[in-house]
Amino acid sequence: MATRMTQRLRILGQAFRFVPAKHGVLEGGGNEVVRNLCLSGQVCGKTRGAARKKKELSEKKLTRYFVDHRRVKLVGGSGGKGVCTFHSEPRKEWGGPDGGNGGDGGDIVIKVNRQVKSLSLVSSVYRGQDGEPGGSKNCYGRNASTTYISVPMGTIVKEQSGVVADLALHGQEYVAAHGGAGGKGNRFFLSNENRAPMTATPGDPGEERVLHLELQTMAHAALVGFPNAGKSSLLRAISNARPAVAAYPFTTLNPHVGIVRYRDHEQLAVADIPGLVRGAHLNRGLGISFLRHVERCRFLLFVLDMTTPEPWQQLDDLRYEVDQYDPGLSARPHAIVANKMDVSGTLDKLAVLRSHVTQRVIPVSALTGHNTEELILHLRQIYDGQQHCEQTPATW
Image (cartoon, rainbow, N blue to C red; front, side):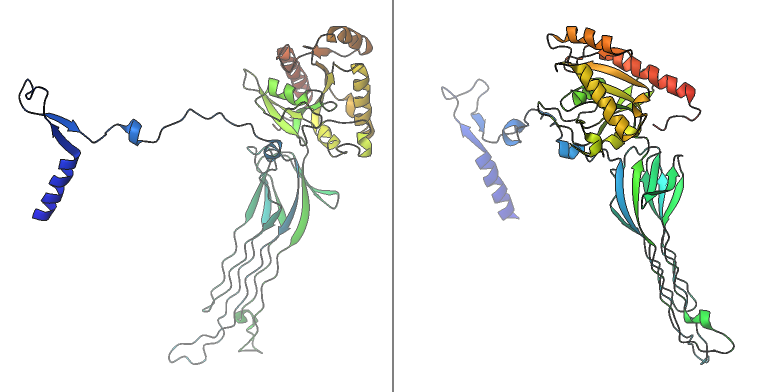
């Protein structure tokens, strides 16, 4: 006990030291106490730096957020095996067979969820749970639980280029892979002819399939244009989406979807389609896989680069490409957006463009945000017109 007190006094003596006061005595008498301990958190604590700026996501990471098609391999769960056992207890020598059956394997079910907007969370391989084996005393194995795959509304399930299911309603289910049946125990084979069966069967393997999941309705509107026309910048200007933007063509390699919100809480989905090139219907450039995205949108926004010598020629080429892929696709409700109007010399081209077309042309500047309100209101007009004609509500 005395040793501990000595150590504490020694520590206190190192922490505090007494210095004689100036001129020998302080006003109240005594000496000046100097404290060597520092109780300031700024010196001992870790210095907190300035708040870091949120980094922009790269194109590779952004592509994980929206996926509109997926190839999935499904393997149902295998059934549990049956067992071969005989009842045994004192004073009951010939109890007979009591091996139970195995449990059934788990199914794999594709279920529609309105909260899911993309197939990005769908894995490439799914395996159902296996059923439990049977037990003695006529105990059956437990059936495996069902594995659910959540998909958005409007998902089409294809197998070998044929549509096997069209999932359009919330909560709709499709059994994609059935689980195997459980094996039989030797109790199942008991008969008058065979009073001591030694047979037990294993469980059946689950069903194995390869399916293709595709979104029938990817978005309400699609931004269609040539590379470097400013589609990604326009999507950033009218929505909260943040696709990659750069000065070189083919910046966007995968579609991005942004949500345009209105004051009455209505929401419109606008898709930024990767740039098309002349001959895209012949699988040139990024190929016809991106024309498929255009097909899944209700109306189109042809984005023209007004800095080119003849922007009206771009409009003719875009209409030709989409019609070659799907005849009549350009006849869907659409709008013509003249982008990059902040550049000098574009006003004269705008007048010539309007003389070549009969549809409405909306001049905007995605860089400065000029006249984007007119585009947003025009989108709502097209959407309300379609809602009035259709009897079914929108899936977004």
